[in-house]
Length: 340
Ligand SMILES: *Cc1c(COP(=O)(O)O)cnc(C)c1O
Image (tube, rainbow, N blue to C red; front, side):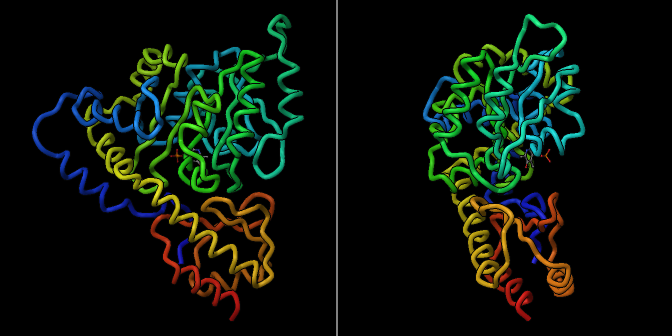
């Protein structure tokens, strides 16, 4: 009954098989190997376009910080939700990588930036007023940190408003698969077709070992060289890149990543339904693979005594995360422990 995080889950066996298969012969290094190069076609198939460039790292923090630093100058700002991973969980990496760029934190319910808050922030941008820090990027997280999903229409609407003010739009897709499973949207619809310029596409939480792909779409491709230079400078240019690419290839093959994301979402749905049927209130709509349950101290103690692992979350709820490996029996065991 371990609901601590999808980062605690093991990697899918297909990923390990792919690593073993990649472990033969000599290959070009630094991303010039055959597996990294042929990944282009698979990404093109997934995202329905050839008009992109990509880079890979082993952590979401590195991918986010690298991606944002290409679009936010040291004197600029990134608009993001106050609870965003880049604001709360990355120890200042975006600011560090951008050389001093600022995060401008916006409020809004359910982990999503509020429409009015976005408008206010965009209206304030004035490049001629030297004292304020103008926003250069809007960063949206999908799945959000509260386990909710922005719809394609919301992303497209926000991206359009940001673009009208000259901003670039970033999506933190550490749990993109869960967001797509929640909204039944295609990867293309949720990203470049909705106006996303740069995507950090996470496969680690979904079932890889460490594989986070940065995708630059359309006009954003002009940042390719800068992204590579920044990756090199910051130590995110692993020589044996083929082993990151092999993970991506295994995850994208036959839509494994989407199947695993759907499995995780289904387990969370089972958990959420079971909790609600016992009268437990949820702090947020459980749209992806995370459930935020408002449990009493008594209930928390009972579950912990039964061996359930989960963590308290900001705002007083308990976060229970399902992964591709969460079994229905584990969910049911937690639910009966709660009842007992
Ligand atoms: C997990 C996560 C990341 C990446 O975190 P790392 O631990 O650095 O891989 C980024 N964004 C969001 C929203 C996340 O949940």
